[in-house]
Image (cartoon, rainbow, N blue to C red; front, side, top):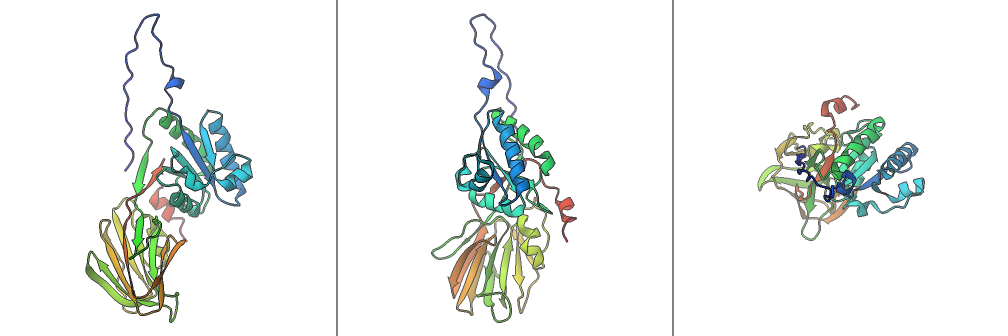
Length: 304
């Protein structure tokens, strides 16, 4: 949902020569903006420099990630240190956005799209400055910016848990392909949905339905829905992809092989000693997307 903007009524000004009237500048809330540019992308670094100079010229505190700092000559911090920022701007493709979402904690994130599709990045490069500056002005006025929260997935085992996934969690056998799968039983809120030898099973958020899920034959899900998608991967006795409520708890009993893996957003990986049980549910810490929404149907037209 979009963030509600609070309308603050101006207090009546007291007349009189001895009355001190607070200026607008004095009323501004100090704001910190983080900027993360796609690695080894000169276009992203140039845009980061433009945003940096624009904001700092207006007395906004700006921090950049280490690679952007090296490219721009600006002091830098790890992206993981941006969690207390009032706004973080991700400049690049969806991969850059996923990295920022994983590292930057609860900070609201605005995505500037330099990629081909951009389901997570709503702002074109030419509109970056004119989008970021009004958001910062709103924050400085002490008001809420337009934003919406999107769910992430949490995968856990007996003695481990993975970093939350914005797109998907995959549970699979030793490897993809012939002879590399495992027996995977899938339970939805304790009730069996599927039990088959498969390369793996994928659980996607609506945000991630257009990513790995789609390539495995899973359905598209409009991002505004509170749901999850369960999609088997090359199962010998396959079931159709299943859409369940976001409050569902998914349990996977994995056996029939020596090892398996759980992978969060294609990056964070947990090796399993089989047999093993994996639980996947919505994480308690969603990601806040700031600024305008991506037009979902326009973005779909860019898919090949």
